[in-house]
Length: 343
Image 1 (tube, rainbow, N blue to C red):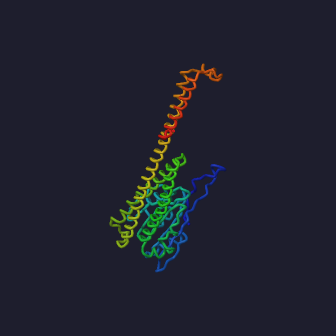
Image 2: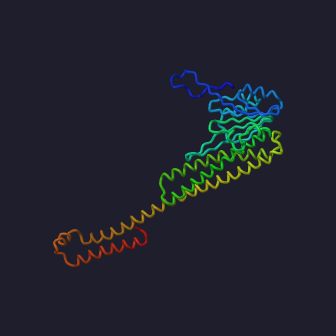
Image 3: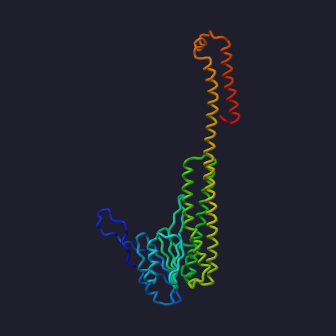
């Protein structure tokens, strides 16, 4: 196994303690001498590469702080490619350096109403394909490989590149379906009862869609370059497959745009609902104020000095007539405001 750079996380006991080294997990397959063999280590890979007819796929699971310099040197990759892989903080991109193609894409997962991404570096050489990624993505589990990566590799490293990228793009569709289902639920919640929790989830979903857009939109340029340039590493017969992935990616970006519009529209409906509720409350307060103001006006005219005589039964009939008229008018006004839905 190649030597690894020390982990950036220092032990809590002392600042001078020796960091624990982190090693990448190397797996792979190769076609050599007309047969398919598995690659289990760097030494075995070096022996296979001595065969000029061999074709290899090397997959590295490399967490943060892992050095893959030995493997990139063994595959004779340009130092800039090795540096980009080591940074592990790239955007989706296509880059061709000295006849080697470096592609950066993202594996997207959706769980517990949260979108997570894993950066996947794919480096296509004349007779090799290198994939480097963090935990959370297993290219050997892709349906496109059908459990037999060697059979796919026999069709060429470029066809294996197609199979892996097609799997990455196809995995976006279940994510989009789950997000659309959640948008439907949020729309129902907004219509039934708008709550701060609904608003919080809308903003979170909006951020996730922006992140998805950032991860997938530049990938269109990747397949545009793969299908519209004369690349010696991509067989003309395989261009059709990359065009199919490009079509799928266009569908994904279109769905992303639609979902962003739906979230923005749902947010507008939420704000409109809040404003309507506020207007309803203001109307009801206005109606109550009108009723109480009428009663208060008449009470002010007669004054509280008449209250003692009224309780003693010495008040004239006119007092009771006016009092009854005031309360009758208040009740009538309340019924009218209720009828026009103000209270």
